[in-house]
Image 1: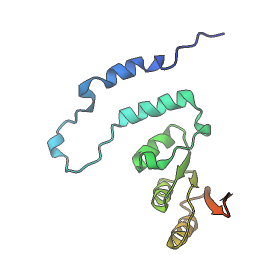
Image 2 (image 1 turned 135 degrees about the vertical axis):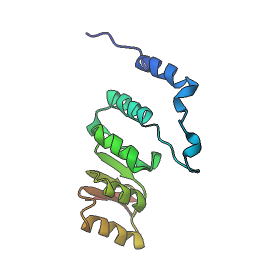
Image 3 (image 1 turned 90 degrees about the vertical axis):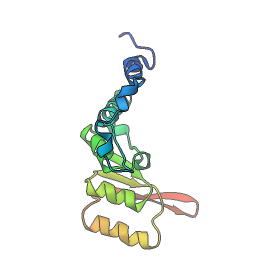
Length: 143
């Protein structure tokens, strides 16, 4: 039986590196218009790699509300994560624009949002999507 590392052992070097105050320094920060969202691509990529060491990609369905950006979702897709969950039509539209393969819209689609969702599907932006409906207290998932 192979020796197992204690939980978190593989993160020690990463944690040390993250405590280095220079990691988040942006060169030429005065050239960036404010406000701006800055993504540390290497950090995000490392976090995704650590996640995939723990859970196989086909078992993951990250919720888009945690990052709300196409760039981070594309990093996940590049790493082999292809299933996503979202709560808003705007998030579903963003996933459609980057051609996410499998999208779960985990919130009832009502009112004008129904037409927005239909347009996404009709335009072929969501090819493998699911919607969760709440009917009489039961969740129904439709494809």
